Image 1 (cartoon, helix red, strand yellow):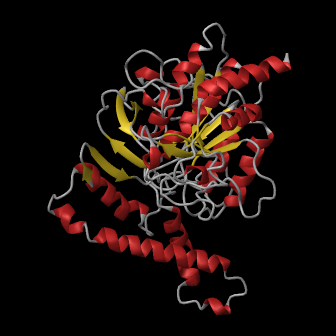
Image 2 (spheres, helix red, strand yellow; image 1 turned 90 degrees about the vertical axis):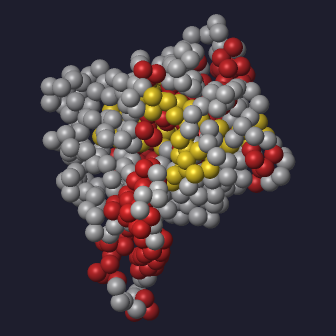
Image 3 (cartoon, helix red, strand yellow; image 1 turned 120 degrees about the horizontal axis):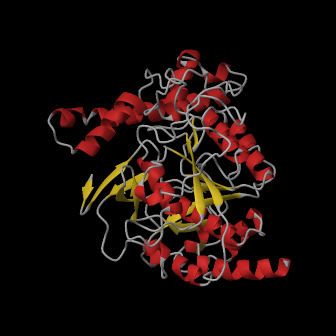
Length: 460
């Protein structure tokens, strides 16, 4: 659908993206004052203070590590000798110099497209439950997950089928055409096998020897943009400035054009923690998570190791207190909340009701805080730049903020930094903004730096 200066498309990643040229005066609005995060003012308060590098893992579609605006910002595993096809550091991953790709095989081939999770569920359980009367089942939990998935997939397929004639007649632009074709051929196709190339069993969490070291993959647009928000070189006038200055991006490729596998997510979180990430950005999400306990265990592991996880709230304009976007802040079986997790909604450069991005999910108990996520101009592959939007863009704002604070205040724990980010958020009381998140606020790095200075001084 075309609207004014934008082409709006919802990709299989589950997040809204907008393609456009930079709007004059908005290039770095998210780092400015007003509705931004006051990043520039925060840096002015730190001019005489030295920083230390912080590793941020980006679990995403891949990262263009050769992008001009990310040079010097990519994590290097110094214990690994590049290209020798040996696991030098004995961490179980061969040649993982800049991270790992869980969407590939040992031969170097990479998966690009995948089914949505509901499509996988429908396909996997179709033979088991087609024609079954749920009244005959002792436990109907799995059946109703299947029934819901089936209804949603068939309903969406019917909607997309009506566009076939328009595709044949050339009524759609190339981006819209690709989106429709991807939905029909991959995302909603129960007969498409999206795991043969990789060669593992996605339901067997002990089957972990798969993937390769290609951390960019075939389509790194989303992950490169996320990485640029966190770490793009500041002040070079080539694109939007990264929020964090002294940061290293670890690319963990896990998110295809479609829904990520629970197994890949769990292993990606563990990889990030085990290889030194202090912050993990998770700009992905889905409605179904059949192996959610395994993801929960991985998140609990990161939590126990003091690693801060930043998760995008999702782009369905829904209340995730009642309709979870997985991974979620609180699973049904979970007794204690994660201490090192922040869930982020998307705000805009506007005021009043327009302050909240129209697509952003919200939740008074499960979304912690908002951050800029609309009209975000930053890096995309081949040293190019683009405006994108989504809670996918809001999450790395906070990942960058957390990394920036940790780099200048290394004595503070990620738990302390998380709490400071929440406590210093700019709160708004107009319309129903206080009901949309735990804080009712938007990240404010200037105030966070003030609080970190006080906390750091108190420890000395």
